[in-house]
Image 1 (spheres, rainbow, N blue to C red):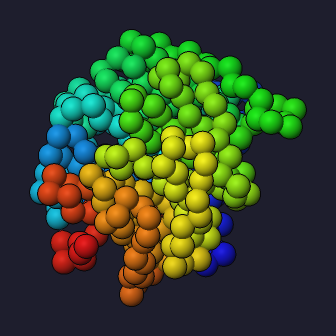
Image 2 (image 1 turned 135 degrees about the vertical axis):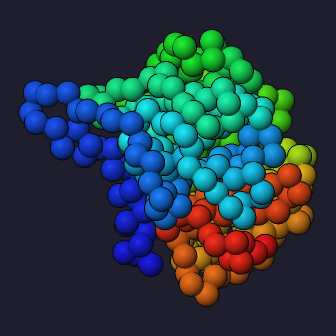
Length: 325
């Protein structure tokens, strides 16, 4: 498990070495993603709903689309970058954004079929790990060393947000791994050192919410009643019923790291390394765990229009008969 965990961490943070592939003094080149018959085998790190469609993104700028609940997939027609994409967010069936290495932010207005570049910063070499849009205008992206960007014009322009210092710290340099929305327009970020961050004004200012955990938190979600749950290294799960003011540790019944979570109503699902699958029907008060026999390294999960979980992995999409809940 340690070896696969290290591999996933390297994959997530590999943007740190992307500039090293260019000659000294030269600008790193970003080429369009290649269309290939093997796109479904690429590592996919995030997925989101675009109406009834599912859009999954991953390494080499691969974007996969499914219009039948994850049973079959096809590669997007046009993606202008070949860097790893780590996150994707849609506000409706057509308008969406993806973010990733080299500080890239992409936009689509046709449900993920084609994409355009809104931002890239290969020389800065600070990958973005998550993006979230509240509506067609306002969005937030976060990444390495407390990098936080905000937009109020649909991504045409992005402003760097100056982050406050965590208590006792000399600088704001936490890695921010995941974004998830709560109630009343609040947005939360899952971070390293057991920290969760919250913004009440769509990314302009942030508050630190320590969970009491010391390891990295990679993902989180919120139930319809506003209960928050975050997960991360070695099966760590924490729950809050007061917008993050206090946290309770929840038994995941696993030591496998949790990589992604999703919720519908009071139902919560999660996935992780070593084939880990988690499910809760009581607003994250308790979880049942299962392990896939093939121990596939699961990296993302999304709930389809029927509320069924569709997962993706380091090995790409699943064959139709492998999609089970």
